[in-house]
Image (cartoon, rainbow, N blue to C red; front, side, top):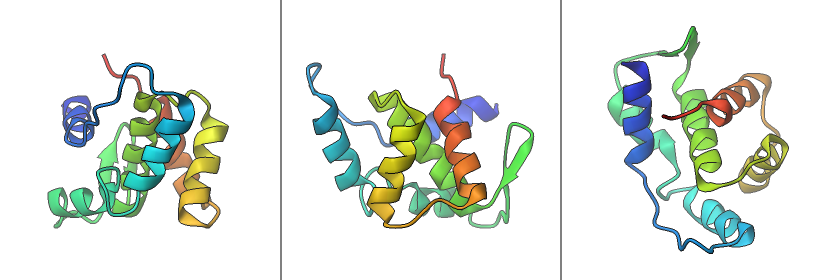
Length: 116
């Protein structure tokens, strides 16, 4: 059930990319859509979990901010960014700050989540 919900959350912000879009085009789109765009999951998380102080995923509870980062990490991987280090650098560049330890853990979980 959790995987289904997670997949539905991710699929609500589907992008249409040309098959030959290169990595720089993907990064540019991620940067554009991450704050206030279709990859800004914070508003969606707040709407879907407005009364929940914590959100369970796997065996871990996340606050809303960290869960939004988890979703962002999964989406970035889904779009074709294959390196976790590159994903972390991209997030830090977009948000002009270093990830905290909980944020970093959430991003890693999202990035490593497999969809079938």
